[in-house]
Image 1 (tube, helix red, strand yellow):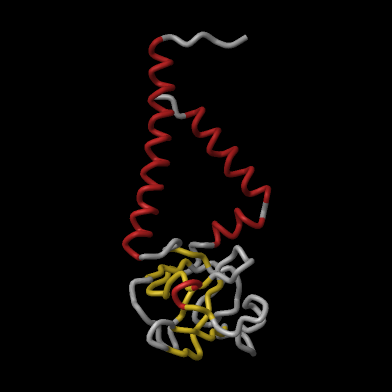
Image 2: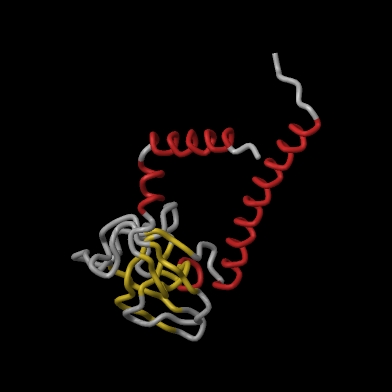
Length: 173
């Protein structure tokens, strides 16, 4: 049996639903606006491995900028490789520039060798225009561990969802 909703309860439930939708759309608009300003499909990323230590630790949040026409040797870039979903954060160790293209070779600071093994089959360089998401301009340490915790532990996701549901039920004005 479903409890009947009075006019006040219905209004309160609709207000909560609309507030939730407002938060979601505001977050989405902020993300898309940031993407347009930075010219990057993913303007904020989390470091997932220790390949860039000591520059960046696992769990650091990186802020990207992709408005420069060229990157320099020594810049830290985030790139996607064909066939892989997770972006990689590494330093540019070599570049080849022509009038139309910039090709990059990257390496993690904590890695012994360059990234040739990470690139697609028979690919020797990254194409700046096609594969680089952006250059790192700023970072915040450790905040990204929340993302890592939620992505690596199924129980943490369920605990967060349960906590949010519990707070939503308790929050009746």
